[in-house]
Image 1 (cartoon, rainbow, N blue to C red):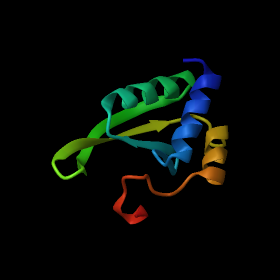
Image 2: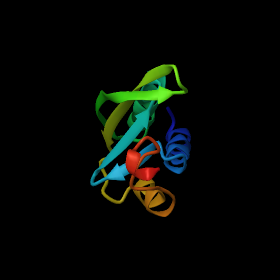
Image 3: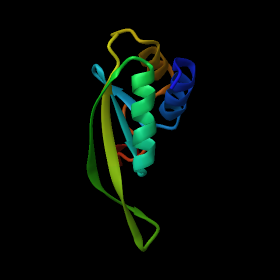
Image 4: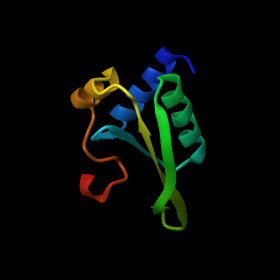
Length: 102
C-alpha cells in the first residue's frame, strides 16, 4: 500500500477511535479480521512493523449476537512519526470498545 493512502486510512481510524497510541506502539481494535489485515498492510506501507494480533473478548451486537474483538499491535520506527502527532491532536487514550470510554 502506498504511504499517502496508508496514512489517510490510519488517520481515519484515529478519528473513529479504532486506533490509539500507547507508548511507542499503535494499538488497533476492530470486530472484523479483514480490517486487521488492512491495518497490517498500512503499517508495512509506512515502513513500520506489525507485531501481533489477538482476540481480546466477545462483544455483544444487539441482543442475540456476539462477535470477537481483535486487538492488533504495531510499531512505526520513528519516535516523532507524523501519525503520532496526528493522534495527539485528534485521538483519544481509549478505543471505542473500551469500557472506560463510555
